[in-house]
Image 1 (cartoon, helix red, strand yellow):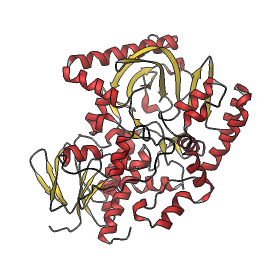
Image 2: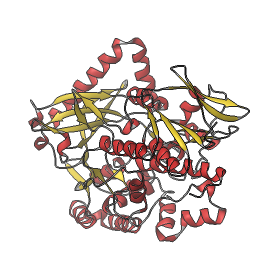
Image 3: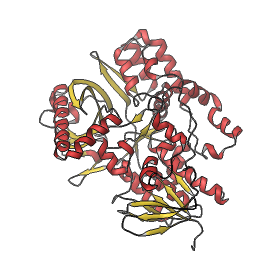
Image 4: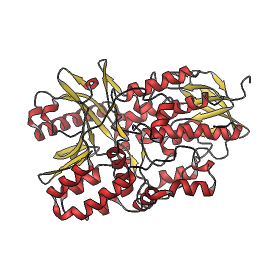
Length: 496
């Protein structure tokens, strides 16, 4: 093989593009193989009748100039000079006739809580203090934990007041902490602002990113972001092959040697980097001959410690003036039948502040229906195997959600237009995500040892996905792509 550092990358999502860019700029010759005809994976964005939609990205962590994550996004060309939109509020929730709002301005949030529930003042002030402390916190961006020495790893994870505070907050269940609040709307806002099952630390950290200006929405949404990354990858000499699904990772003598493509072609490589769901890698691309890292398996086997993130999302065009002025908010509704059961609350995100997502005076809204992870996937999969019942159930859910929206916000009547309904099967089909899961959050007290981004017993095979990081998110995928290349550089004795 002419190039002793030839790398084949599976998947052109955030992790795959990140890996490709960093590998190309550190002496590797890479080709990315993507099964879809577009880049971006779950963050590609969607279209309907040729119109761009945003159905993936809510907030991007790492948008503050000068922050460590911002520098990483700049290195891969994701942000360029694009404008960052900062919503006025992180999250809002209505309960019992009151609405609690987690404003971007922390002082405004504290004042609104004092007016809404003065009896919760002491607990809210403590919460705000935690948020201010974590506004200066950054995840590890320099290199992965497995390349750090014991002393270096400990210093990185727990150095400084912010790191020590986060470690303590990660031991506290968010739902249990919120029970100490007297106002139902406040309890609801705290618990629903992050995925179910999260620790108190997860909420404080995400809200700290937002109030500290390091979390926002790039104008244009996810699609231009991933397209800029793809352009950067091509500029540094990468080879991007779309509509080219991979059939199998070729293993010889315990070492990855290349790929077998579904079209019949074989591609030889010195390194294989799978930037896709690790369980799909093990089950489909390795034909179940090799198991994933036990720490990855532990995350899958212990949903109570690592609650999976799964969603059923519906997109509509709507009159934004008929809705409350909150970027993302949760509200009670009449019971909506969903995945064989019923839900009485919906979560809505409005994209009307970005002209990209405004059409004919109406704006794009996304409605998330609470989804029960594996159980929901099994429900939708059973219907899909029957064909028409799957389509019929999607239509029924869309109509039920539309009816619930009009009942809650009567001025929407006549302006609401259904665009799409994405079930867990939609995400499984687009990204090969196992059971349509988008990742996980870490529950209170869950072990924090990160997987090493490898498949045991297989040399020169690297993994890069949100499952290999600390939590779900585009920034996690970005860093996992970078970290995978750093592992290859470490073995090749290349300075990174």
